[in-house]
Amino acid sequence: MTPLRITLALIIIIVCILLVTACISQPISENRTGNANETVILLSAITTVNNTITTNKNFEESLQTPMGYKENMTPAQQKIPAELLELIDINFQATEKERQNIKTTMITRNQMIPADLVKVKLNLNQSAGQPGEDRVYIFIYVNKSASTHIIDPFVTLVNGWDEKYHFAVAWIDVKNVEKLATLSEVRSIMVVQPAGTDTIY
Image 1 (spheres, rainbow, N blue to C red):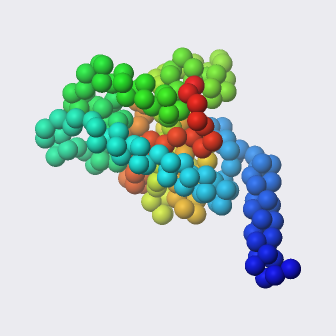
Image 2: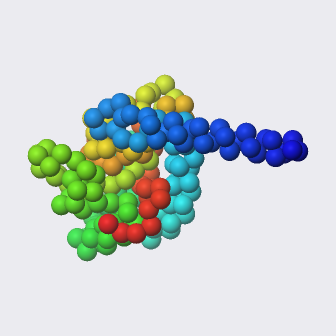
């Protein structure tokens, strides 16, 4: 066997071990599922972000930002993508039709779950209070000195996280996005598409 084949075989074995470890890992918090696997989660998140970033950039560029809006954005709002600001900030001056179009687009991309489907789609306890608002799937990048667990009080469900690379992916109530962004430990927020999804809810 050539050195190249030996190397490839070792890589395959290592990846298989990591995948098995990820499958048997247990959640460590009530609102966390998936696993804190540095390699598997990182690769999944990178793929998710790469598949989403170009489309989201084009989508954001199509939005009409009110004159003077960017100059008056708070530090928290500067961390939030335009499509979410248009949904949550009245100063964005979006019409109801424009907001609905954004929601429809995000639902089609599996980036949003309507409020009435949240409990079913996220397998939440059916007796756990009101469903609240729509949920959106986001990538959260935190400071190097911070733990990703700082996001737990603000999100509905964490699907993956990596302390080494300082990020997490999670479903969050739309109305909690700006609250999360106010944390000094949060560096940026991006709307992403859950890995492995290609059909609407």
